[in-house]
Image (cartoon, rainbow, N blue to C red; front, side, top):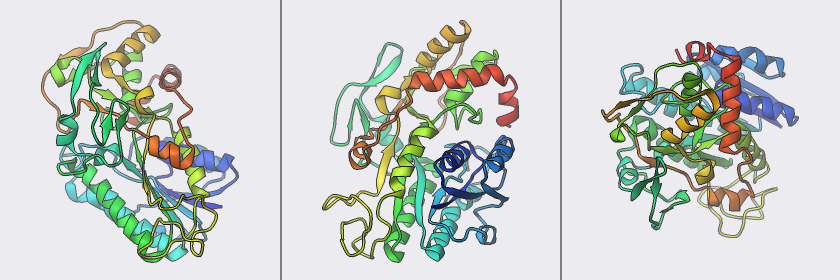
Length: 372
């Protein structure tokens, strides 16, 4: 198949491109190279046989070369929860990247009769609802000690509240999800929405607001200043993580799902319209949590303990000032993804952290090069 990837030289985009090439697919993609570090992936992506050009999803003309394709993977976004409010990116620019860019890619899908895989985020879930989750401290981490209709110690499900506020970043991705599903229904092409947990792995750009595992391990390895922000300065806040290779395994399965769907019955089984899929009767799911889940969850304090074993102990400062949009506990329950796609992550958090640590040893200037 022929696959087009936006943001193809980003961390996730480049890893997907390389994996899809290894799987025998034709891959093309564009990148605007705005993010520091993306140029570092240009050569290896091109060397793998990916047709690559400099282009920006905000501009329709930059996507005219995306022709004869079967699937689009929307991996281009400003991925920072602080985008639009931190003074580094305007609110308009954030929406142009994350929402209007998706609209332009949907127009490509419409033109080419191609499917779309939208990479979304756990940040579409309600900040207030997440802050209200019943957590307590245990072994240097917040843990969830109750269950509800859409959450449990295994994580939050896809039915968890998405009510505002969710941040401008989260809102841009949630709006993209909705408009993508509407395009798929109106114009009869498949759309899958993958709400990903924190992505992590060797080669991830080292920014605290985008790749906390990479940032923390690289900073620890090279004795850069670190601090626990908010939540009493304890580092008890918890996130789960996912390696791009595990996302790739899911994407390959989603390519084999149905190719077409008609208006008003989008996502339901129809022998006349759906070809090659394995949907169950009445299965209308299009949105999936994609994450390592509770097995890959770790607090900053626990990550520090891991780093101390790996590189030696050091002090971490405490900053009691709350950071905008920060949350105590975000773990995604991917049970519905496992059920629908027979998928589960293969890379453990220990494997991911060890991979990043090795990269940190081999690339001592990585933070300065990639973070910007």
